[in-house]
Image (cartoon, rainbow, N blue to C red; front, side, top):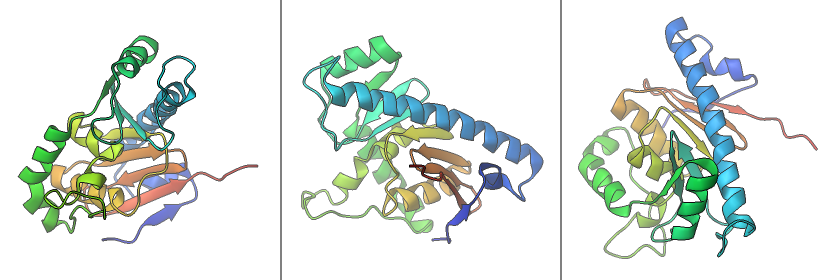
Length: 202
């Protein structure tokens, strides 16, 4: 796993990068930031209980890419949530455990080549190690709606999602950008990882 390079300015995410690639990545950054705002809006709608009941647990994470939003977890979607988000934000709210599981099984060897194996959790079923961490919204959307730009409603899981995206960028030979409330991550397809962390104001 490479050392994470934390940068002070957002433009430093592409410092010393070939100009054409830098321009492409900064475009992904802007898109990912827009998706991040949408993810927060989905979270706000589903947890407030004002527009749709029953309200979603505040422990959930939302990921957005293109016209799709993902709720973290398995088997926790509600038809009322899907209808409301489609009407209010024109996003398709999804979860797909079988698709995500099949993806991991199909690419397990490739992930291992880049040093990644899904972490296990103490409450995982004995026959399905890694089930909990596979349910993270940012991982689900990378499979269900593959895109170079993703936005999520809470800080990215560094213990498992960070090494996952590091490996995925190299597997797909594609630079990936993930924006969360705390900053923007760039996973280069050549093993580098950079993070612009927002300065918190009081």
